[in-house]
Length: 81
Image 1 (cartoon, rainbow, N blue to C red):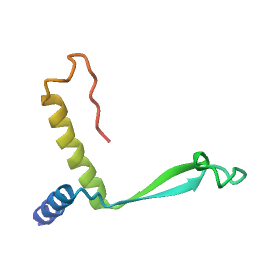
Image 2 (image 1 turned 135 degrees about the vertical axis):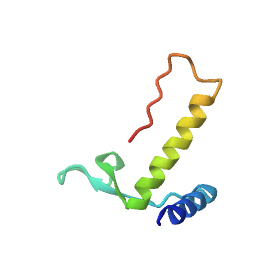
Image 3 (image 1 turned 30 degrees about the vertical axis):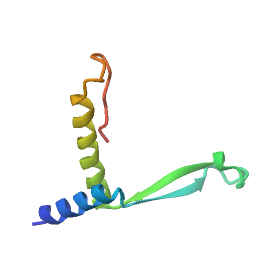
């Protein structure tokens, strides 16, 4: 039931180069200097659709990379999440 809707949203997302995720900076420790960007870590609040899109994108990338003639025979390719 949801597959056609998810498929349409995913294809639209890929064609528009937009990924539905938000990343927020979070201070690592309260005693760190908030003006220094290295004191923050990225926190992503992914929705269910974002997680599905991420898996679809990973599968597309993995297919492209493994079929490429530029990949070394012993190169490790791990894109699973």
